[in-house]
Image 1: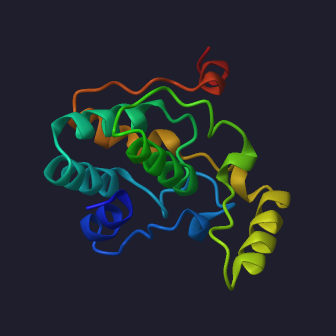
Image 2: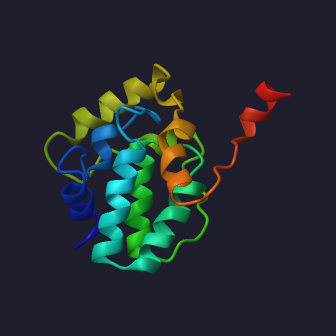
Image 3: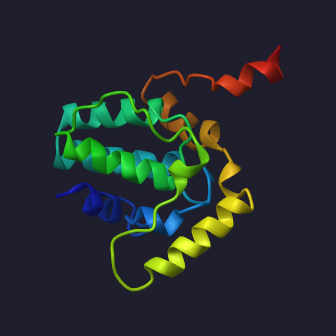
Length: 154
């Protein structure tokens, strides 16, 4: 089973497997949360194996801003690399949360809506800590604090 179908089957269609569906929306709990991450992790473990599930866990921990668009694009990259995780160099800026999808009908509309959301600062939402906290804790992994966090806790 490929990663797209793992997302669809494990979340019982509560999450779209299309990154463009979430384009421009930022990291929001309404798109992605610890429960969905756990469902996907379990299916990865079942379908692909323990090493893939461990790589998935590292991937979730390492993504700086965990928007659904970035999560899905990174998941598909993980699958393309044979389920071997290497630290990302993406999903750190606002534009990394925009995806217009494959060629076909509706691409222009998705692109225009994504640009409008980005221009309106829709992608600046960052619930990353809340999205993955419970998932990481369940697996005994401590979440790292983002760079911006320290200026609010000093």
